[in-house]
Structure formats: structure tokens, C-alpha cells
Amino acid sequence: MDYEDKRELENSPKLGEILVHYKIITSQQLEEALEVQKNTGKRIGEILLDKEWVTQDEINWTLSKQLDIPYVQINLESINPQLSKNIPEYVLKKFKFLPLTEVDEELVVAMADPTDAEAKEIIHRLTTGKLKIVLASYKNINDVLDLIFKKMNI
Image (cartoon, rainbow, N blue to C red; front, top):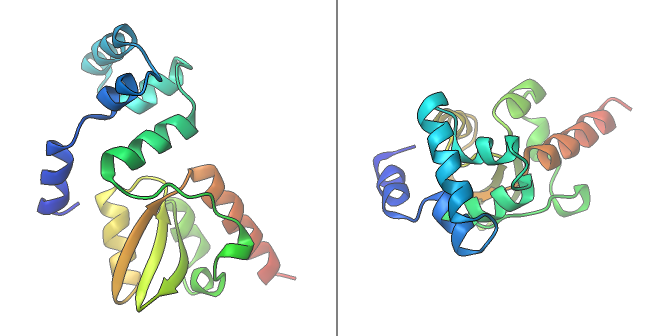
């Protein structure tokens, strides 16, 4: 994550605050999760998932609001699978990303964690040109990658 990304994230509402604002969790649940975070160092979203107070979709939707990026549901018909075939499958799965399509010389890439600086750096190294990051669930990305790479082996 570069300096601009960090500054934007610091100035944007926190994930927990957004979840409370949209009544996905209560203020008391957020306070309890923050206490757990102090003791464990885990991310708030992870704690809320562990306690089963939220679903992964709710976290992803809220994260997309926080970061002001689209949250997408990927299917094989809506992407260009060839873009993924140029990158080793293990890299795509390790860093939880999937190139979707190219629009006006801009590569649209779905990430499970758009705040992952290491993953963004890998994407920049493996691709050329401008990137547009969108958010998708890890499961959705993984399922589509499985479909892409199974088709390749047929």
C-alpha cells in the first residue's frame, strides 16, 4: 500500500464504525471485538467472523464501502480467462487475486484483500499498464481460478 492509499484509509471511517452505522453489528459487539483485538492483534473483520456476528459477504460489502471500490461477484462468462493463464496459478491463489478484463488499456483485477500491499506489488510486477482494483471474496476468486485452470488441462 503506498502512502496515498494509507492516508486515504486512515482518513476513512473504520470497518467497525461502518458495520455499526449500517446496523450489521451493535456498538457493544464492536467494543467487545476491539477488546479482543487489543489482546490478540487480529483484524476486526476476522474477530467478527470468528464470533459469527457477520458473514464474509457483509465484511466484503463493508470493506468496499470503506475503500470506495466495487464489490463484485465473478463468473467465468464475465471475464477473460486468458489473462489469468499468463500468471502461475499458485501466485494467483497465494495472493488472492484474479485479472478479470481489460478496458481502455486498464487491467481490472479482483482482490480478496485490496489492503494487501505485498499482493499489490506482485500484481504491479506481473502486469503492465494501469490497474483498477475491485473486491471479490476469496472463495469466489478461488472457485473461478479452479474453473480456469481445470479447463486448461482438458
